[in-house]
Image (tube, helix red, strand yellow):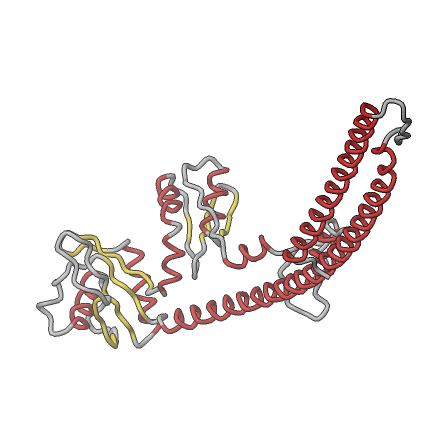
Length: 347
């Protein structure tokens, strides 16, 4: 039972009325004693020869009764307060128990949601990897020409004819060889201003072997010059793969300066041929960290923090175990947070 604000006010008013009643009784007893003393003094003055017997102390005569009443009222008030406080305590304890139960249920559901989210993130990463692989396979017959000046193809009948003549001339490809270019065009996007870098040209061959032969000749010559501009030929990578490969730019620049051979295997790896050792790095963060430890002047790239890492860093861990973020099962441990909450449980 909860003692409401109105009930407390009633109790306080009742206590004040009782206190005032006790004060009135005390005042009345004191005044009555004084009146008796005054009457006795007057009678003694007027009738000196008569004897009047007065109580020795009128206040003492009425005091025991008043004290008994006060003590009884205090006992009743204390007993009533104890009952009210006991009911209030029981109500608060019941509500705290209910709150603890609900918090435990919410924590349990939250942990299972986090585990399910990790499963979904893992599945999404696997699907994203498959999509990137499919896109890469779809682009496997493509090459990109970087550095061709904007408008250089305007004099040709089509971009395909321009690229065919350009590659045969610059890469020493026999004129009798048909490159079988299916289509060629500038990369999508608005035409850049004259001072900006030109858009690349995407070329799709009908034959994978022809594409590889063109790449081989272009890499052997390390590109070619066109209108006093260097033109490079490379694979047509998917955007996410190209982004990861660009993270190696600083590392490959340092390797070139030190004349250390390296390769960049697909999709985004770096193989470095150190003296007496060959290392294969799968991420730019791994490569820059190792190269920095070897004394190379490169900026160490920090690995990106994924959503899975953020969720794992905030998840409750089971006692005596580490959070692995494994698949959600019926026997998944969910007792870790309960062990921690036990330290705050009331006795």
